[in-house]
Image 1: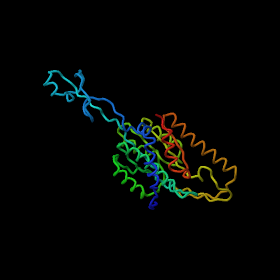
Image 2: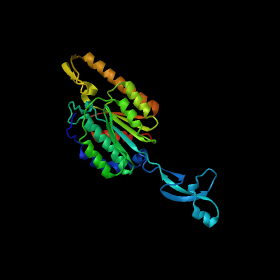
Image 3: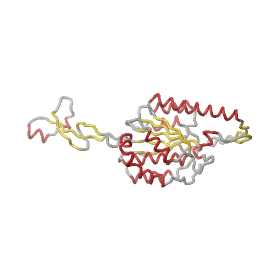
Image 4: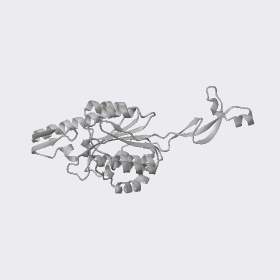
Length: 294
């Protein structure tokens, strides 16, 4: 496994902070920061009373009000309806690929994950960034800037390695989510389409976003002639000749694979984005914000 320190660009967060005000209303809608509803019983702020009805919880009765009026009243609260955000970040060996870029797929994906967590933190909601390959390295959802900083520090030294088992990992993680949440899956999604489809359906009851991160050389196969290809996850080497016909076939299969993921997401109401690591990280991140369905 790789234990190198991953570069997370601090300037990304400076720019993010600068532009947050410009998209504040749209972000708060997307990330549930100020959504509230009226409920009886426990909550945040008392907003009034109503008469007791059969079926209401006895513990919700305000007995002081009864003492004054000899009538049963229920205290009403304004209850916070914030969502917890669960970010699952692929840390398999294939994410360590840099191609011709200065930044690896994992480093790019990490900045996207940290950007989402930053926005959730701005609304004081809970988030967790967990990494996965063959198994999940769980993080417990918490809130606050201190937790965000600790999370970023942890991500800078996450070991990269192993194969991706997205089916097993989403089974594991699904058991840890106990209420409707925002789930963000960030990966190169270079796995069996059936496993990816199963993962999507597994989280279909949640607000779901998939972000695919590829290197430019993967998206366009910019090599030609006699070449040695190496599967980073299995170590298998393949000596082959990259012809124009082979590149065209590769491009078609990749396009079909990406379209299949996108079609599956559309069927369950999830969002799907694909970025290559040569796209400025700030542009990629705000593309996901501007395309959110309100």
